[in-house]
Image (tube, rainbow, N blue to C red; front, top):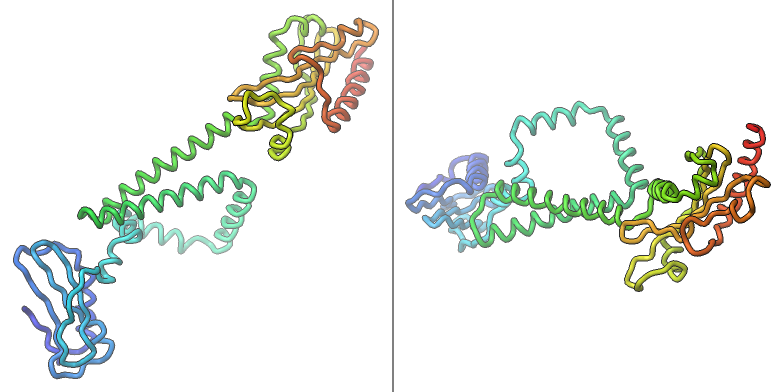
Length: 343
């Protein structure tokens, strides 16, 4: 054993003890060594006595730490198997992060953060907060992914340090990779469910145009060729209204998710006449179902009344929302006026 005489200054003992504790994770020699500090018949300052410790290294790689008693002539207490605080500081999330990031990258990151103006940092934080408020669902998904990644890392770290001897940087790398894979899976599932279940107005409009082009009676009523106009209006149910009004739409079972109803009107311009399309649709299993898809041809007197209203899809006409009715009446007046001016 080697001894450090207590007559030496206490700052030296403090520095030696701190250095030994911080380097306790180094390779263990094959022969057993003991490095101990004793306070023999001398008065040591309180700060030095509290920092004295006994470190024992065995061939098996075990580590024991014990703090000396405050009594000047006391020996080292019974060693315990708990890791010293210096050991804990070397491991864990921060230790693994520092071990994984190269020193050059750490210094570059510190320089960029120190040179970044304070006003720009405040502005970035405000923009991030505004984005989180506007995109609450995406923010919740990102936050949940980060929590899952950190939780998976902590669980992996605890299990690996308890069962097998794995270095902290390897645990950190494995935890980050596994967490990223889990986060990618969560994001992919979220966007798949969003596309599979959520209703988008642009998709409803595109599906309606595709359905209208499959019926020859639409082209015949409008004069042979037609194209969509610039006017468009729509109204969509909220999730609460869709949940309460689930009896208004056909479902094979109550286990299906209630779908939001969309009512839309838009303009068609043909070679001879103009028309207004009104529809009601919802999404089921990734496809749009049209409960009503009708065309009103604006040709008063030119066509019979039964040919001016064409039910393209659905069994019967549905009552439109009040907002859509107002828009439809205004659109018909505007379209009739435009047709008269062109004539």
